[in-house]
Amino acid sequence: MRNGKVVLVATLIVGSMLSLTARAEKTLSALFMSQAAYSEDDVRAMAADFEKANAGIKVKLEFVPYDALHDKIVAAHGAGGAGYDVVLFDVVWPAEFASKGFLQDVTKRIAPADVAKVFPGAWTTVSYKSKYWGMPWILDTKFLFYNTEMLKKAGIAAPPKTWGELEKQAKIIKDKGIVKYPLVWSWAQKEAMVCDYTTISAAYGGQFFADGKPNFHVGGSLEAAKYMKASLDAGLTNPNSREYEEEDVRKVFSNGDAAFALNWGYMYNMAKDPKESKVVGKVGIISAPGADKVAASAVNGSMGLGITAKSANPEEAWKFIQHMSSPATQEKYAKLSLPIWKASFSVPAVSQGQEDYVAAAAKSLPLMSARPETPSYQELSSILQKQLHSVLLGVSKPEVAMKAASDAAAKLH
Image (tube, rainbow, N blue to C red):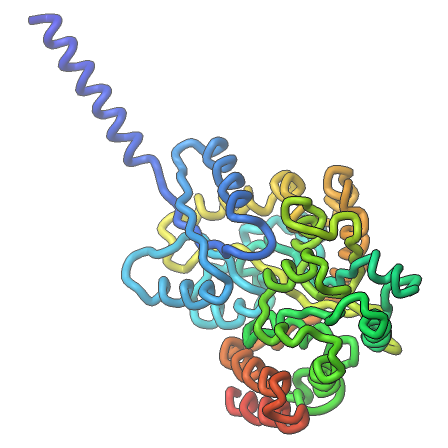
């Protein structure tokens, strides 16, 4: 009888302990992107390290393509229930997400001492109206990649410093029969095309807004659209670029079918990987070209991690974000996305084997130009995508299409 009571009491104690453990364990739901920058395997590995260091917290990961990321976040906010705890968001979304109450203000969670340790361009990724709505995570811009062997065959001593030089070098390479289409871009009617357009526009001094009015049809903004179309008309740009996204660009360049490509930093190490590329040992990288009075150009393609307004686990969510964005984590996975931390660029493990990439980034990151900041960015981007693509398809003249873009954008304000 006594032994039976002991067993019963022990069973009750163990059961209570298991019940308390189950109640104490929390699961975070996090939404990430399934393309560019960090791979899914890398993100899963980062999350696994976090779980090991934080007993009682589990992380449920979901990955979607970039094109679905925005709408997933919006839909989750409008649906019943808590939805996601942590979401990855693009640099162009804080104005909308903050104004509509999708994200929590984390300004007080960020140590003032850390602000100066991070590249200023990274903070613009998560800022709106002098507040922080997340922590910078992916710090990226578009770089110009070039095939060193093709340039050597063409007798070109150095890669182009300006967009005009790029056009001339591409023509030399084409005329010598080295490759049919020297240039490849991500010009499908998607956000990546707007990023390319922003990069070129910045070099030519384009201003998307002047005195509060859309300005896509004049100055550098118009010149960028004309440049894009001219490269197609001259047979320098692969015409399939009008259907390509970033991964298509990477594969074309890595297959040896292009001399130049504009793409995000993640392509550098993948183009040097024998399992992914046929151009190993022939990969060069520099900042995107400039123009007569501009040394280089760059677009802010960075992304941040934020806590959703409906998260039931904000403290745990912030712990997870701190882990994902910490110097230790970012330095460990620096081969696909460079850290947001200035000091990390001096860490041998970060620069080793990718010195050219780090040097290009050090030049580009301070120059990053923003796409238009507006709570109506998704609508504005759709307008730009439609009109730019009509130019590239030869349906509309640059002057007509970009004026239409300005007129339509004016109605959003």
